[in-house]
Length: 415
Image 1: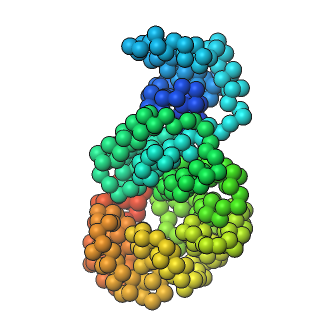
Image 2: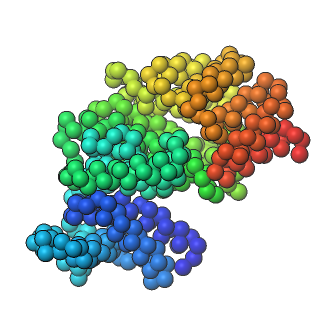
Image 3: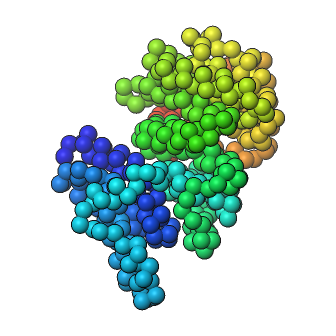
């Protein structure tokens, strides 16, 4: 199998993983055990498919393997006799993997799994962490980076979330309207984080993981179809589309990162931008306005500018001011500082960065140093800019970003 085909298998397995997990949880109820057997099925697929070729029904094949392994696990349990009756009811005919697919065509198990992981029995942080693992396919390291917490802390959080799922008896089904509203904020935040990890990967050789950003968009479309009148759902979908529309222009042929102000805007996807603008324009007419709609409005201002120098920075600064008043989020404050620098001047932006340093929540995050470096360069402090570009490069695990930051430092040194 060629390298391209191998990548296709890897991408397909990542896409199918949450669907297969949802199917197994729905059938057997044990979330933690289901995750284990699905991982075994994915490993089997990754091992066998490159050598034997893709099966006719990859999803059914994975469900088939995972279900058999779950059944074997149940049969080997010390309480086997107490479970035999339940097993007989749940057991599937294993002779034809295609029969599994027919059992699931009427439900989007991934969407159900998404709402299950955001159950009120879990804390919001645990729900988000678990969903990023189960639905988004992120590693514990990637999730810890998204939450700005140590990896060990995140690992414990995920284990506790799984245990809460196991002991609470949470049913695998879409919630009713009241429960759905209670879980929606967590669901949207999860999708937002999954998209962000796909659009700007926290580690690895590639800047973008399109499998994650595409899955986040797919799931957000599904939530939007479920809740078409919710302004924040529409706002989040618009934000994803308006951001993802720039995907092709964000990297050079060799994978080098290209910042927003240097991108070839003719490469932006105008059809996607039009869809995003239509969504956010309609959503902004619904009150009260929430943070996803405001972020989408900011993205729309960027996308509407034919050239970087045409960007309406005063409007962006005003939108960030409103967003900052709604959300005590250090990343929002960081972006507000950038917008302030673009409108008022770099000194004003640097003063706001000093307040963020005192806040402490972004301590150790590369973006704080990267933004400071950019503003110091604009202010004419080359030495300071070089130092902070290098400091930022040392704090990021993403190779394209690290290379970009070290290149900026080298450029200022005249290397």
